[in-house]
Length: 459
Image (tube, rainbow, N blue to C red; front, side, top):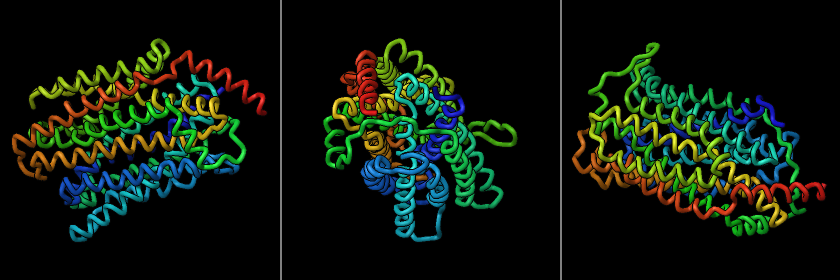
């Protein structure tokens, strides 16, 4: 039985990851174009190149983690030793050096690539930890839900406080670029503490019947013939495209279409919150509600049906979102809330289903590669994020976007599509993939029973 403390400890890890991940998704594009000073198309290409490499790097981390042995286990040591590099390189990513445009571009490539590699180095083992904390699917559902609750909670804190901190520190030091770096530094310290807490409060307890001395070739072969994993791979890519396009364009939407400077800011405890920050924070609150609803919904209808239905609703609501005018603030926030509930319910289901795929692989091929399966799953999310952010940068350029000026009608319509039509297409594709997923509740009950017997014979 996993204690409440350990469930919270596991959640702390994704709280740390998600704080930075949301900063990357919501603010890194506009940081590079409006603060750092790079053209949108150049940034889109950089995101694609660096994230494709990073996606390939994920399975390397998973393979290494699967073969790690230490007194702390296979996966927990990475939380201990990479927490500080994670925070430091994150600050460097949002730092603006005094260089030429070419020098800045090279600096951006190097720091962002390093950031994503360190992110993989700590997040892949963290995700894989779910598969070895408990052998039971229902406990994994709970752990996955705790993970996502804390993830969205961390994202909510980061998104709500980040721009007020940027504005405040920029005013204090008299430099916007330094204000960004200081604000990220505060988030980085929080992330380091959270990762160390996750390391301290969790435990690896599943001993699995992995083939003796299985080769890398065998591991990869088993992954490639794992049909349920391939279906989740496609659904995950589409889901991340859905999220990355919406998150990456939200600040543009409020800066250039809504023109949030024309609206009064909301002041709380001396911090002034702009509409874009509140919009993103509302999304995180709704994500948390989606995670909470995912458990009873999946227990009643099953993970597959809950996933498909959530994507169907998100698609329909996203299409309607395109027709809102800049004065429809209430409707814009209300639909953000509804869409984000749907999006929030997806990810605890995804990660729990990935753990089921690891069980399926162990039962069918007598070879459990938890790290490889979760790293390859993380790779699919990186691919989805790479595609979404690259498309955002390229289409911004295609629609004629120019930083810090009044936008053309074509550019405004393009920015509106980023929060409506384009994510609706991604949601539809994700739904189509998941309809073919074969590991329903009855199938997983059979897998769990047979695997339990196999492990008893193995031990």
